[in-house]
Image 1 (spheres, rainbow, N blue to C red):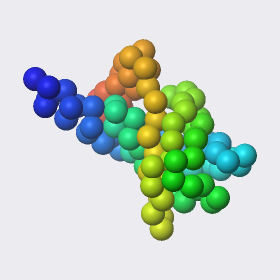
Image 2 (image 1 turned 90 degrees about the vertical axis):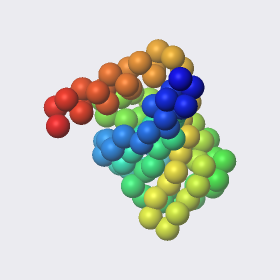
Image 3 (image 1 turned 60 degrees about the vertical axis):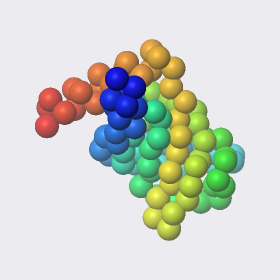
Image 4 (image 1 turned 180 degrees about the horizontal axis):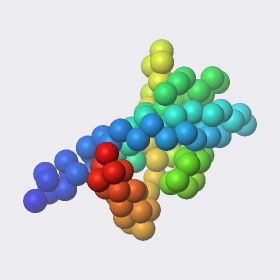
Length: 103
């Protein structure tokens, strides 16, 4: 069903993977705390100098490099939206399932 598909895409998965965020001509190390298959994610810190709507290139250990946008900045985190194509979705879903099995 569509609602089940939406739930699958929007469910947040805890990852806590180290990465590097490039934005506004800067670069910052970060931790991708969680990610949904729709591309919504949360970084563990505020990216200094970032603005809502800034373009972001995020390189994540074990997952690859993705582009997206900064959606919101809180006092302790940065909310992002990454762009995934179908191939990437499969890869990320397999990665998440592999981590769940290993847990």
